[in-house]
Figure (cartoon, rainbow, N blue to C red):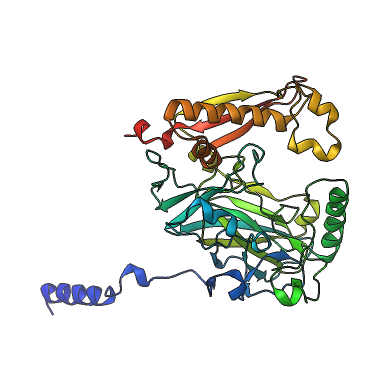
Length: 417
């Protein structure tokens, strides 16, 4: 057989072996938790309370890819034609539907679970709302308002806020693990004590609680199922925008299997989420896990590890306002009412108050956006919620601690190429 014939045969065999496209070469073992029905109540893979008796809906080994199909934070009926009058129609008892929990094989109470965020696939629709009685400036912004966003991985735009494009910087507003019985008892007690003192605390409420057989009005643990709204040692509704794709979030495990869940995904958010909502959306969250044996015993709260993710979400152009603990003398502050606020009311300057400094910086930023860019005050407030960061400057120069508000000027189309 001559060389020409051998070459031809070799090429033929080589071509035959390469008939498969690269798409057919796989390495991932995927555990997928999907959505069914229009709302959490219709979905066996969804819950909106925390308790260790909630059964896992899937099991995954460390290293396997877990895919969670999540719902928006309010489990809403909002769509592109939603208007302000639709905002108060959501039910607070249904807030923060979570997808899961997922049992992680080999994980035990006292371990830690490292959760690596691999990808977030956004829905096409998102929203940001002002809800009466909710948000950092709820005493000022008392009327409902909504901005409907069109979402892509390039940016979010809205007919309700022309001239603005919000960069895609998605992260899970809520992600965490289930508490154990010991934690449920401890956290329930401390929150009840706060409520008894007049503080804002959301104690267990079985109305609209899911899963119904565990947490509902006839549920086996209806008096002990914790709300998903406040963040706690198990993570949950932390709303920390630095938990971007590429980072690893580490949770202490309180039950065997940990009970991993996620939901309330944000397309983008400023540090503070000041209106009470970010750009809220349903999404598909992809993660993988690693068990850190006995490391959970050393942890008080979740922690995050990352590389250049924080740098990547920093603005290239910004405007910054500076806040100190100032207010009008005689003005009553909603944040301090439960402590008995007569002294606070009479003062124009508080000592060492980051809350008041943040308020001072934010109000200046809203004024700036209105004056410089012609947005309404409601639009400016919402823009701050999705694109302005409240940052601590210093906590030593008494009495005036510093909080700044940093606005990403890249969101204005006129500042972009």
